Length: 343
Image 1 (cartoon, rainbow, N blue to C red):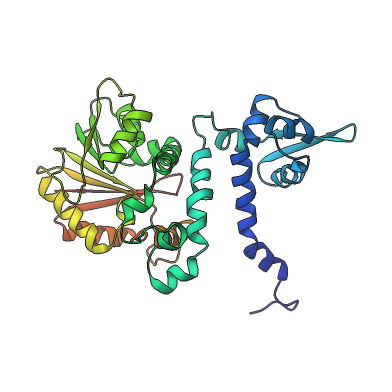
Image 2 (cartoon, rainbow, N blue to C red):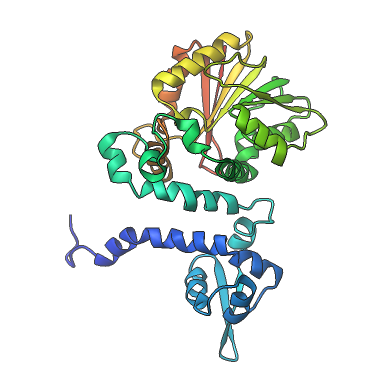
């Protein structure tokens, strides 16, 4: 039933101009606003501009940031700026829980694909060809289209697991699995969280050669030899031996057919009693929420071959591959859930 006053145009403005809100955060991160304020809290806009090498009009950006991630105090008629707890924790690049790299990836890659969302819906395929000139069927080439892009994506995933890794890995007791393989484990960020939580385990990170080589150049700091890297394509090459195979943000990249192919291969490699741990953002049972996961699913459309799924859909894929007793647990943070299935 509509309200007597009629629809609110302000709400339409809020929805249609939401991209401007994200661009403010992206620009502030790229310019280094939050880092400057972390080093010397409380400067005016002129001092911030001098530190950043920006124009004197930076005050417009800072004032909008006050509604999002900055605080401002007026002294002697002059506006002075500082970080909030939110920006100090998640937007200052030196903080261990910083999401700075993820925001840069969203700004420089994801946002450009989303500009072609209507075309993605029309065609039913990702928009790397339109946005970057990379064929849509060459997913790894598209995601890792240069060394710089690969490094940015890997740093973005580091950011994700620095905040959410412990939560998803502690959803189930993984101590019965001393030998773990993190398929598509990228930089080894989740593996580091795993060995920190479970001192008795060893983790092999299995990823394509270019990713492993970048990890060794930029991220490698083995935790007492308990983390190793192995090059390979999990669709084409033999999988490392393991008691547990972790698939974190992997299955959502692929079609049901490719997920089934990969899970069947994992089941074949699994020892009796071994298992698979699927970590993904989970849709509600009816697929109608939560909104964040629905948006992630659209992101899979514009950037990959896959989609986000409900727990029942993941259970069905696991059962078809031969896995039984699939248990699902959502994490307190809510963004990601974990599904553990055993052979």
